[in-house]
Image (cartoon, rainbow, N blue to C red):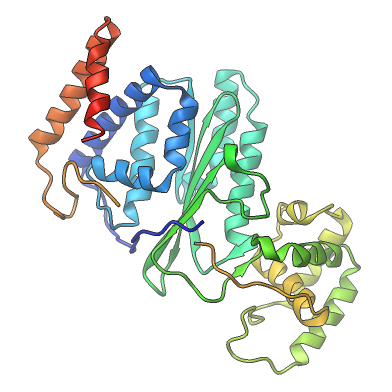
Length: 353
């Protein structure tokens, strides 16, 4: 079910003083969560797009900004590291940090003495799905994974569409994931819903996923022959699966590699190194236009204020009030550790107000 909020692209940096406060307050909130609940419960909350957005607002970031995702994840990452937590694993980030997630997970696994292979698979696969199997016009630039040592995980990643100046956030949650290639998301947060999206993870596209997998295992020459036929057709300018920029020479190399690897299913095909959006689009074209497979182009697709917003909306952040919140939470944590559990109970009751 789509979850929608406003995420226009905003550029610029978070002020150092605010980011420092976000880390401190984020750390106190995480401490309280882990004292009262399990790490699994924290992951469940992070997977909820409304709760995640509200947490970003509580920490003082702009609710209507793409930067909430990247800055909140960065603040939580630093907070978890400063707390030296072993219950929660976090890796990834914006740009190169996101691309380096598998290596980062490997290092964490080595330090903690745990097997992180399933987390690395989840990280790579979710990124591949949202950039290759789902071609919605949003280029991924942020990827963060939260996990427990038991292998439960949440992935939060974000893409940008420079044509519309909008961002789109993708939430994944292992506990609710039944199939990586069929309606896999916990939620997709986006202001704009597009009419025609190459959404190969839609439930109704099961047949075309199977056809693509079967076609991929044919000899490359057969697929190239079909593509030459497609290029000879006069297609409408707004054909929902675009064929421009498809290099037959490069595709031949990719198709040859696929033929040699012989992926057993659509997920295995998607996860092959070097198989990108153009290769999948070419195979989709063959399935759709040559073999007449129907395809659905359905798109995938509230907030509270506590300390104002970075840009002064709905009101400017008052630093002393922010620091007071941190101080109060810190006091609650210290007193609860020596048996004053009623303080935590009071904090719980505050959430209902």
